[in-house]
Length: 224
Image 1 (tube, rainbow, N blue to C red):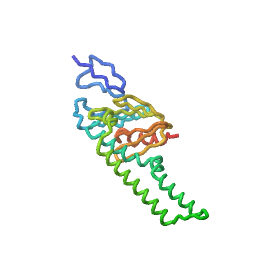
Image 2 (image 1 turned 90 degrees about the vertical axis):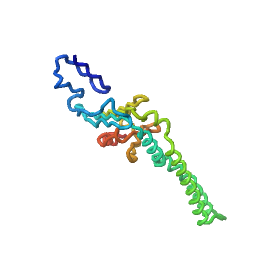
Image 3 (image 1 turned 30 degrees about the vertical axis):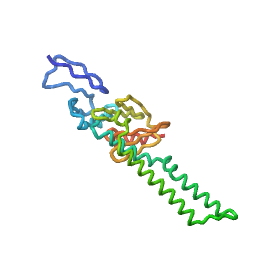
Image 4 (image 1 turned 45 degrees about the horizontal axis):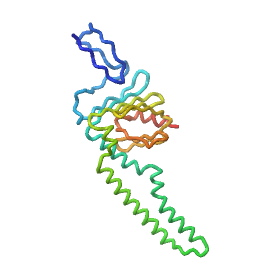
């Protein structure tokens, strides 16, 4: 008896041939896609990186099995990228900029009693206070792992991404989603993680292994 090979999601199921010789097993991957070394029985503490591989149709497929550090990696990247977004930076500068503009207006207005040194001092005091708050908030975020990252990137969780010529198909434990490259408004690489933000969303973080250089090129080249 020759037991039938288990079907792996994302790849076309192969027809089992009872007469096939054991010394020449059938390949479960289509032509042009390199066979990977993922072992289903591997321990979750050791991440498995399947890919990237290029299929015969030119699409890229990558799979990654998370370890016990993946969720913390995503959490760290989110805490850092949070303050690199233009909206966040604009919010930080809004209050001190308002104080500076108000003082400048008072200077150029007849009877203004504002002093340039006082204005600049107030500006930097407020800005320094905000920077301290940002550092404290970031440290607090880094000290704990957000539950949403634990839900999608806990030990043993599998993340797969399929990149066609114009669309990214992402499969996680919480479900599947597809986004056209033209819909991504922001792509940031933060260390070993990648932040992707489709139009109309708050964005999401992925391990860098799921977004290889070839995929990044497609994502950035296809943005509208």
